[in-house]
Length: 193
Image (cartoon, rainbow, N blue to C red; front, side):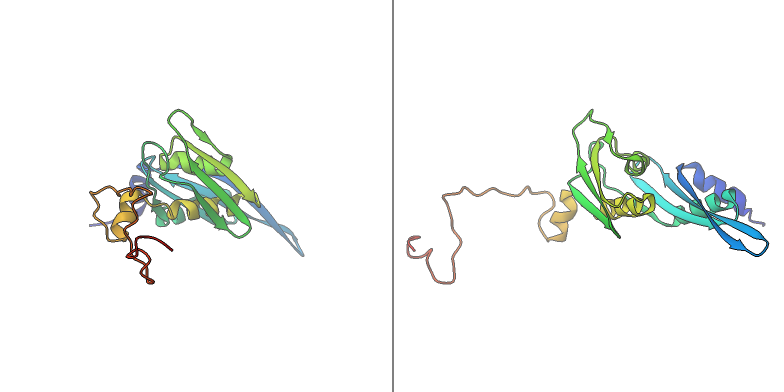
């Protein structure tokens, strides 16, 4: 039985949409002239909570894009999407870039720059606000957005991590009824300090 790696790769990428954000060209001067190399930034996503990012470098653009796709497939993350938006505010950081990501109500859309918008849309987020802070370098912004999305937690995940009952909702205690005892015994003395 023979394995056709190309067909396996095509089948894998068939479930993901891809978006090439930019291609960077660098050159180095040698005795015979200049030699160019290319770096491509590619985002892969299934619009259902899974998204990946990769940067590929090569002497030709198509090869750099293929490398970037392979790296993006290896670096997939799962983003918690609730009602088309993220569960809470978060700031993602990378180098000197910081990106603020905020949830938005239905019908808002993705209000963001080029890089955060592409990542959010391929992750399946339909309503979100974002602001790029610090450096606007596309690579650093992409890494910052991924840092923010990686650190998102749903309320259920936080409750289970704290050892609380996942099904029970947190109870709100009225402001006047303080029943906690302090080390000095002030609560036992009728609350008089």
